[in-house]
Length: 432
Image (tube, rainbow, N blue to C red):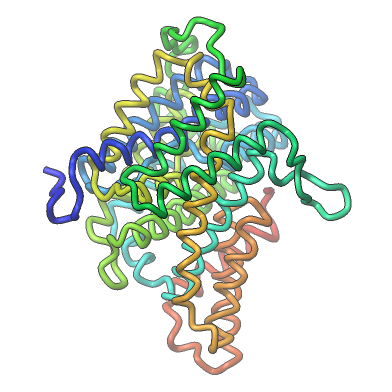
């Protein structure tokens, strides 16, 4: 079913890759409820909704598209939901979820058409390489920031953290162990590095399981969006067109960019095209719609999937494993919370995977300024703005401008011009 031989992989490798991806993205089970709780949504509601949306989207990706790309509620999109949509527009979270649902339905319609497939093929090669490298730099930055190796600084924005803190020391040990295992070409090195780091954390008292490790998942408020008609009426009554547009635009490009980056790293791209792209693109749009019904913000393809790819994952068996582990995690909330609360366990994997993805820089045509600078802008802005979508936006805006002034406007696909205008409008006029 998953064509393991054709993809040069096997069952043990896929299972380890799925477990690796799960461990690197398990934090969303805890972080997402914490963020959406600020919008008034009950923690238990979001905890269960997060798992439901993740399992539906990731299983769709596995069974329909056969890709090792996991789907889950997107970081950044949840903050936009909680602090900009609910906070700024002074609306209830139920109404905000109605806007997410409508955006998800439009998203599904677009995914059923050739639009998103054409979009992937329309993105210039150098921008694709920039997206891959930018995501790599971004997740490496996330890993260093989570571990405390990099901290906030009032003057320089970021600075070196306290190298004497146990968290940083543990991260450095995990990084060293994982790199040694990878250099020795040990299968599942990323996962084994996490195991070693976790054991050190446990025996040094940093990782403990004082509470009950089992807890039954609940949905205290049931379905938050049950009727599509009432959802559309809510959006119209509150004039949430800009909100729907923002969710739609950011999700399209965040997910598309991440999918391209992960697919390229896994060697699954066929030239300028992505096989089974429609099935893959439907995964996040369906998950966004379903997730909003239960109570979570829009989903996205997860950049942490690159950790599983680096561990050897190449097929949907990786993501089936991720889905099963998320289902199990629904009953192990306290346990998952404890492991996710030790950044040193997962940070080394993010840093190393980031370094692997930076190899895409070598494929950029640095001798051509009109090709190189937009790619550079993407790479630079993703980690500095903590947003994949913003990096893509700046690349899309600058690319056609440079092509026009150099007289090469005909080589730019019409869709790139259209989205350059839309991105410019979003950055200038819509709230962030």
